[in-house]
Every structure is written in C-alpha cells, then in structure tokens.
Image (tube, rainbow, N blue to C red; front, side):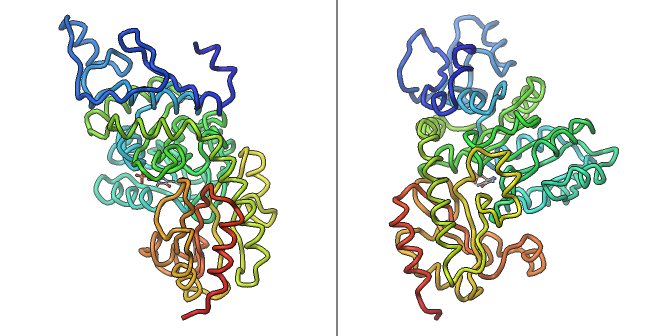
Length: 398
Ligand SMILES: *Cc1c(COP(=O)(O)O)cnc(C)c1O
C-alpha cells in the first residue's frame, strides 16, 4: 500500500483517504466511529493495546479509527511517519511544546508568531521557566547566535500572520539539526499542498486543522505530525495524559474537507493573486503584503519554497485606522470575522482585533499598521470579491 500511494500526487492522496481496517470492512468514505471505547476477548491483548500508539483501538482518548484515519491522511500528505490529532491547533502546539520541554529549557522562536502561540510561550516562561529568544524566521545566523546549552527546540511558521513573511525552512532546519535541536514548523497557512516542511528538514509539523485542512468553517481541530517515530511516541504518550485528543466527529469533518484541499488551495491562491494585483493598483491602498508580489520581501524565497503563494494577504489603507474601520463596516460579501482557510472570504483589522494587545511599538515591529487589513481569501468568484472590496474602498470615512 505504501509503495503504491507514494507515487500518487498529494491532491490524489487527499481524496483517497487512508483507512484503518476495522473488521475487514472497507467503506468508501471513512465512517464516524462514535464510540468512547472498544471491547476485547483477551486481557493481554487489551493491555498491549493500551501501551502503544499504533496498537489496537482501545479507548477514545488514546485512539479512534476515524481520528486515526485523519492522522494517517495528514501524515501521508506531509511525508511524516505518524500524527496525533487534537481538539484544536493550540492543542497540537501544546502537546508538542509541553511534551518535549521541561522547566529550565530554552527555545528559539521566529518573531511575529500566531497570537495564541506567542501568548502560550509567555505562559511557559512565566509559569515553567521555559525561556524564549525571538529571531527572524529567515536568519540561520541569528538562530546560531541565540543558542545556549539549555536550548532544545526551534519553532517556526512557514508563512507568518498577517504580513505573510516566509520562513527559510531549509536554512533554519539545517542549522537546528547541526545544533542538535528539534525543529517544529506551524504549516497552517501553507498546507501540505503548498509546502511540506519535513522535506526541508523539519522534525515536527503542526496545523490548525480549523483552517485550510477542514476548510469549511465548521470545525475546530489540530494535528501534529512527526518525521521520526521516537518523537511521535513521546508526544503521543504525553497527549493522552493531557487529554487533548480529537473528537471523532471533528476528525471526520476535517477528513471530508481535506478531500478537496487541492481544488480549494488552487482557487484560494488564484483569487489571492487576482485581488493582490487589483488592490496594489488602487489609490486608497498604500501597500499590499502577499508573497506572490515581486515587491514582497519574501517573493524570492517563497518562489523556491512554496508551490503556491497562499490565500492570506494583507494591505495597508492610506487612510490609517479610520479607513481600516470604515472598510470593515462597509464590506458585504466578505465577512468581518476571525480565522481563515474556509471557503468564505473573511476580513479582519488586526490593530483593533487579533493584535489589539500589542503596544504601538510591538505593532510597528511586526509591520502591522493602524490601517492594515487582513484578507483571508475564500473560493468565491474573484470578480464578485473585487466588486465588494472596491465598493468598500469607495466608502467615505466617518
Ligand atoms: C488558528 C491558528 C492556530 C491555532 O489554531 P486553533 O485551531 O484556533 O487552536 C495556530 N497557528 C496558526 C498559524 C493559526 O492560524
């Protein structure tokens, strides 16, 4: 099975979901195994199953066939050996960080991290004495300079939010390997269709499945996948103790969404390209941030690392905060909402919402302006989207 699947392209593998065989039945679509546990004839077989991540299904918090199918599907797309699905993206990030780090450890993280991750790292420092040094995601020399004897891990994001800076995964992961550090990459914005960090040297890849993997704005979930069995087993043992496991229905929704991942990503990327070009020409827009634009600082590395530039872009309104707020009030088709990666286009004003806790200085450092708008481009017809954005850009400031 492995050899046959290995020759299939990612989009095909996403459609043909790997299924653990239960009682020799072979359903076409993976069913929802809505059960909290499994029964056994032989106590020795049950005991064996309880101690192994790849053993027989025994208890819902340890594993479940629907959840296992999702874990295998994402591991397959990412080129990983195995995965652990969780109740949210933050759950996946936490099983990895808490499962691998102990008090006194140090990690090096890319600056401009997802807000929840940055807040979590603050907690780890305040409560567990796990310290963090922030470096640019494309500066292996800065990584080397930040390392101390107690450094254990490097934490990166393939594409950053909302400025869409692209990490130098090959350079950073090679440096991490040379220094004996575990490299963890949040690949949520890229998905395994645009980038597979393990191919570039990463040890662990995490996703918020809430975003593109699920893709339909109807499920919260996460997953961590591993290049190496030892790391997988360590994190799996910790995850079942922490109780971060995915629910079978949520796993099923994610699997169902993933079958159209390639179709959706093509449209997200082409829509983003179309809107980025239109926005860049508009007089009310001072700058557009999307790695597919030659003016973007990550344009060249993105072209090498990614097979598409992604569906998230941001732009700075020349009119600043007032223009940002007026724009948010004026969109009709695009929805004012958090999150991204679904079929619907969503807009957000980071300065007053997702990044509101940042000081003006921190905002400036992350490149986010008072008039910056983030657009999570959906799969609607591009002309309908542009018509909506264009009418919102015409609205007078209030
Ligand atoms: C949304 C998101 C997360 C957190 O995922 P949840 O499913 O909301 O817990 C982590 N990283 C990135 C890049 C995200 O966009």
